[in-house]
Image (tube, rainbow, N blue to C red; front, side, top):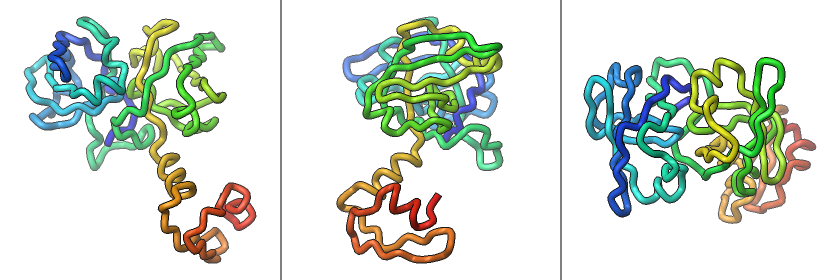
Amino acid sequence: MFTGIVEEIGIIKDINLKGNYAEIKVNCKAVLSDVHIGDSIALNGICLTVTEFSSNHFSATMMKETLDKTATKYLKNCSKVNLERAMSANGRFGGHIVSGHVDGIGFIKSIKSEAVAKLYTFETSKNITKYIITKGSITINGTSLTVTDVTPTTFTVSLIPHTLKSTVLGSMNLGDYVNLECDILSKYVEKLLFNENTNLTHLTNTNNKTYINNKSNNIDLNFLSQNGFY
């Protein structure tokens, strides 16, 4: 598990496509301080397994699913990438729950200045935006960010100077593609409420009252609000 707090910007030393998979080598330093073979490192939000490393790089393998579902195809030698080690049990939870399993891609539609920050608007599919809410969390190239606005096909985030400097987002341009991971909690809620195979036997609200659902799918936002769920 990751938290979306980027530890350093790495540089692609080599990316070698081999049919349905690719071998990638990344120059870096901070994420290597306690690395072992088999450890997980998120590269632009993609959870990768370390297969080899030295004092200034690590290597990993990307399989077909990763190549098909992420913006990996836009990487090349010397590309900058966000890097984060898997969260340690005694670490600070500075961002939000990030699995490193990318849901899809989007691209930068607009960049606007607002005081010291910059507003980045990304365009993506409705399969992604349905999980995004204003003031909710979204992972963009492995960076945990707060959504300021959302439409059926776009969403906007505000990047402070520190984020612009400490992640690859600050050096990206209009039209550039990014990896997106939605808040995993929203996907669990969707499955709980709308999957016809869900066997939801009871719900307990803030007044400690229990409502039996009897496997029906009649629960919606109005029902939850009327019965004390916030």
